[in-house]
Length: 235
Image 1 (tube, one colour):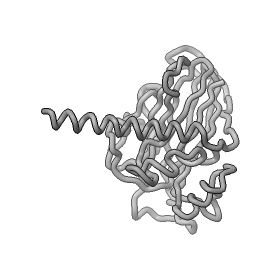
Image 2 (cartoon, rainbow, N blue to C red; image 1 turned 120 degrees about the vertical axis):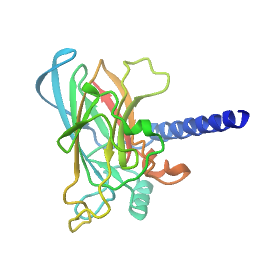
Image 3 (tube, rainbow, N blue to C red; image 1 turned 45 degrees about the vertical axis):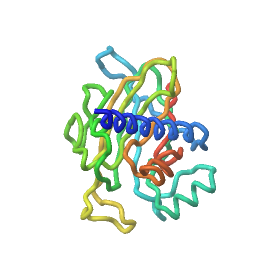
Image 4 (cartoon, one colour; image 1 turned 180 degrees about the horizontal axis):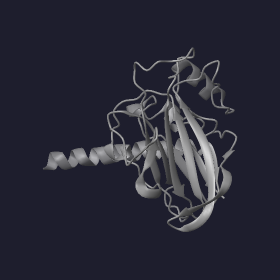
């Protein structure tokens, strides 16, 4: 029993260290240009009629001649990205969303993946209806053994702003999927989900799939804004 408790404590400490490191490095990192969700009308929601905004993102396994790397004024991060082939979200990881609105995000996913450490993060959490649409089909989660990345919004520690937590896992493309001239899948996954924002607040988001470098693969792009980490400003 004592050994089991010590093992559990070690795991919890490791999670806190990784999460704290990502938040710390992310908070002090360079920011790309903001990407603002576009209000397209109104929509009926569980909270009544609300403004409806949309935003499109893509995930690439690496930059190329056809897909430029994140536009961040950080020469060291840029050089590491090129030499280590960092994955990244594009066109920006600095997101601006309207307050008290329904927000729909579409993610086009071109990367591979594998098994996620925490199966909870393979579930959809915090969206309207508790689902996301995967290639035309609504699901409450995906196979924990076939995760490419996650899009996970959470708050700064000890925050007194409105609660906001959203987790949407995105599936991996198959190793044998047909690719284009740049090496990207010709038929990438498309994921769409919606959630409701509250009053104004400042949040962070991270990919929670270990797709980086360093300690348990949570370094490098995982903690670098512009790649797999960023901010969400609700205004």
